[in-house]
Length: 450
Image (cartoon, rainbow, N blue to C red; front, top):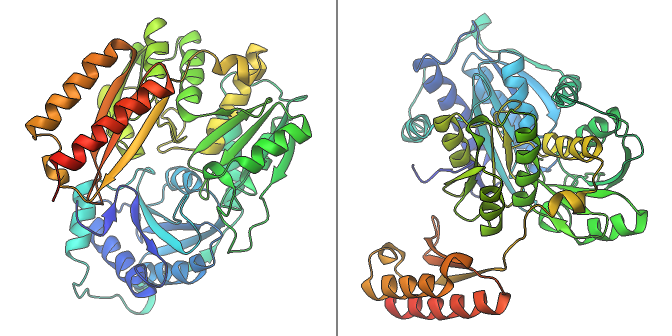
């Protein structure tokens, strides 16, 4: 892939790396490249554009809308909603393109642009590379009645909420279930409470008053302290933590303990298996998923296929193997029967539905797996290109893995964006994991020194 597109669209500090000019050029070029690739079916083509509440989203949205309309694309502005809402509506409305302005869990100064092709799927690498390579090209522009038209339809969020509720194949009322939802002052501040209340849950909102500046600020899935406190204070059955664009979901049980993406994945996998709907009795996780997940699934006859880190790679592995459930420890859960991308609100609804149908608390459900202590050390300033070939380091890794045996594992992963190597070790105890991780980190520093 090129330097502009990352694993989740184009992202950077708004008005610095990500400017209005860049947003305009990206939208114009994307429209032409997709049209040339035969991806536009409507005449004229139609694009849906949504955003999270970041202040910078206002001017970036204006630039994207202007670029698309100048390329002859009719634009429907959706207003503020989650990223998976844009993905779903792109498919449901038969739109030719979906665009989301969001930097997900990143702090407010950042923003991003995510493109969804027809059907609600993220653009593949080849298309992104083509867009990037042709970004400075001078395109012919339509004039007169051929220019794109722009309208606003913020009511479509109601279609998305209805889709979330209708995704429950065996729905039961959530009446009597008290949930605290941390909306991260982000894109789901309306959709998440509406979906939960539609199923009868008693919803207590926190961080649901976005002002354009406070998105992800000491809240959401990356800062769960206030959610844990609120669950205990409200004597709630659980808490749900979303991020700024609500494509990920973490949870808190009634005792204030965090339930991570691996545990949620295990809970949903067992529910689908119980219903006879878990295709090939396999789920997809990542190489960073806890060994406890793999052990728990193996014990009940469910295979775990591991993909590279990133929900797009989880999705690729799911499609390649015809699997319907996958996810990451960070809370990106992909339920391919209902969504083309990770959807935090969808995940939360199915998690609560499992609680209601099973009669078990979240703590009971999460106990299906035991998380092994996991230590991650980032070693900067090294030659990451030699991480997989240096003989001294390879010998140290083999020795460490032999020492841990089947009760632990070692993973060395070069960073995709920085000059550092990540050393991850899991073991039966924290002390054992930390000891091996520190030892390997020292070997990395010595063997891969620049």
